[in-house]
Length: 562
Image (cartoon, rainbow, N blue to C red; front, side, top):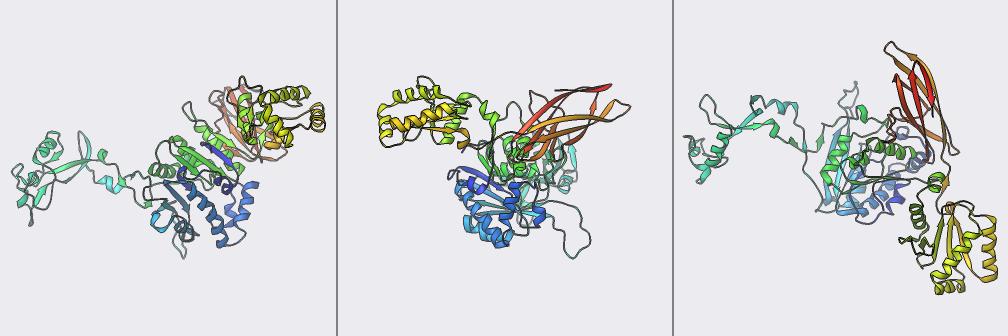
């Protein structure tokens, strides 16, 4: 399966298509077994359908629904791979015992991380505030990938570094430690015999010549009261506190990171997980992509990734989020939907389309492109395939293709004819009456079967939505700032899902939305005088989209041009 790909669909079916032992890290944040109404986030058809599946029964049904998916995740993990399962108090005990321990084995349980979601104080109640989530960390084997990480020092720990010199803030740590030594570390230095220090004797933490080096570098602190010298340890030297199981240093989503997804996880949380259990170039999988945090962070950290979700909105918001952070050095990514836009396929690059549609049909593309008799691919039995990226394909195309089939492999042609199998497959967007009549004649009079296949028989096709924009002035202030309302009207036979706005659109940089999700198609924005480029996308329930770009001249009067 291709990587750097967002896929719309049931993750169970998609996971089954991923190869064994191919994924380095899996992070899953499935819908919690909690309040049913709260669990509906996007509200689109795909999510509601999945929601009904999960809630057909109680906790046993939920565990069964989740367990078959985790089993597939275990299968696709490499032997060095790891899984982080995000859950809450409503089902974490069931998930650990009934799913993770059974599938991964108790011996492959590594850690139970506690993420403190909030520090808000609770009102008076009969129970303590519930402000944490659980993240279970399991490995497929004992050879799992793990990189030691550090948490930032607490304010109390930083206060220990209260001394300051030209090198920065520091604290002092002992140069003498307990235990007698007869070697170098037990020798006298600066007139101090370590073996006579303390009741049991002591020794230096390093050799006298190294202590001399520390002194030359001004790294030793000599107390004025004549007490034992100590080593300076600087704040800038500290990597922090080694990662513990309690994560109380990662706040909820804030500022520009927020995309309007209610259960969105902070990027700092996923950055910690991805850095700890993967390396650059590794493959990260998120089977419940949600707001897209995992794949956005994985992409930024130069990992390969796959994201899956049942919700059209989740997939499209993730796509827009990736677009917003992409630059010239970013790797390309693809989005796989249930349906394909007719215009995109019809006017795609011809060679790319030929190879892609042949593969979708079950054949192998022709990499030669020249001297191929017009053959664009072959079926598994070597029967030729020709692709026409056209509508209303006629009789002349069939005649030329039959000539190519006869030259391509005469023995195969005769074999297929005798066995009443297709001698060739012709793929196009549509066929006219003449080619259909000739196909029938070849079959009836010559016993030659040539199969005509429309693109829509291979992949589902739909028309993308339409969109229009209206502009109206609301007010302007004494500083020349205009308050303008933008209204988008979209139409799709599948139904409009949401709109997304980029009010600083740059054609060279592409669509980078400032407002990710707009359900109403109305957006108020403040503009300074001058020329502005505004882009709005409409997304329908099939995940297909259209974009409209306008130029807005704000200077005394508002003038809109397409």
